[in-house]
Amino acid sequence: MFQRHSHFALLLALAAFTWGLISHGVAADQDVSKNITVELWEDEAKVEQTIEGFFSSSGHTNNWAVLVCTSRFWFNYRHMANTLSIYRTVKRLGIPDSNIILMLADDVACNARNHFPGTVYNNAGRFLDLYGGNVEVDYRGYEVNVENFIRVLTGRHGPEVPRSKRLLTDDRSNILVYMTGHGGDEFLKFQDFEEISSHDLSDAFSQMWEKRRYHEVLFVADTCQAASLYRHITSPNILAAASSLTGESSYSHHVDTEIGVHVIDRFTYYNLEVLERVQRDDVATMQGLFNTYNKDAIASTPGIRKDLFSRQLDQTLVTDFFGGVQTVEYTTEGYPFQDAS
Image (cartoon, rainbow, N blue to C red):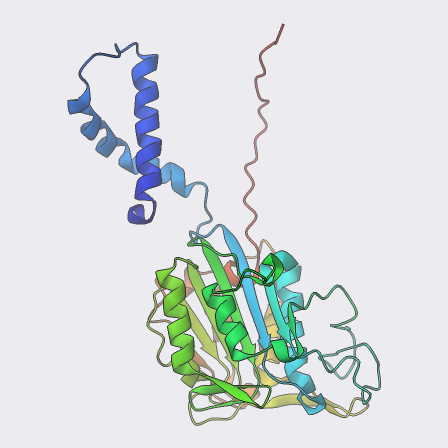
């Protein structure tokens, strides 16, 4: 941990040491060079503890989400509902729109075949309209393509791309990357005209790590043979969850007979059953979430990859990825102001 902040810690320690010299009346021309190294190393643990106090227990200071529906057309209604369901969840748990990149074909809500115009539902009971509220789509239509997705992750944009379409992360950012659509062995289709491969994803995450664009990543894929997408990832601090293992299909959950299509996929549906009960200050863990996965209910074998992840899952909060960090220091003491007169 100290290596990632060695320069910052050194500056803090040096400043503290210099202030100590001044406050103790050490002469400016006095030779103290022999003591500086000793003082810095003695205070290193204290400085590191002070620095860590600014950050959350997971070590991150901000949360981001990249939510991608790679499908288009009416019969893929459920993929848009999947993505909007996760979008609603992360916003409810504290991630603002400014920290969410939402990629949707956006051709369902106002489709001529939609019996309920301007709406998207994820349940046949139609209890919640996922689209009618405050939804900010960053990439829509044919902007949802492999090139733009990789540019978002790696930060390789042209000067014409506004900040609202950029993933402005740093080495203290926890990022949720959620993807849903039609896939196969080591590929995921983008709108039926191109594909992203598992090697493309691995390379993008490697670039992100090299460029210090994340602290930790949760990669979630809801598609057929989803586990094959994380097969070649080698970058540190990445946790991955998939709706199905290689060779298995993923399945939709149920049909709304009035809408006429399936409205949500099984894997996303059962994740939402847990996430809907999570609150911002919740202590629910990723291990607890993964323990709820039921192969019979999901109708496929969910995949979990944790060998690249540095923390224990029973100590990793769900809100470390699905929520937003809000660090507040509470004090009952007043601040002492000096009388200007």
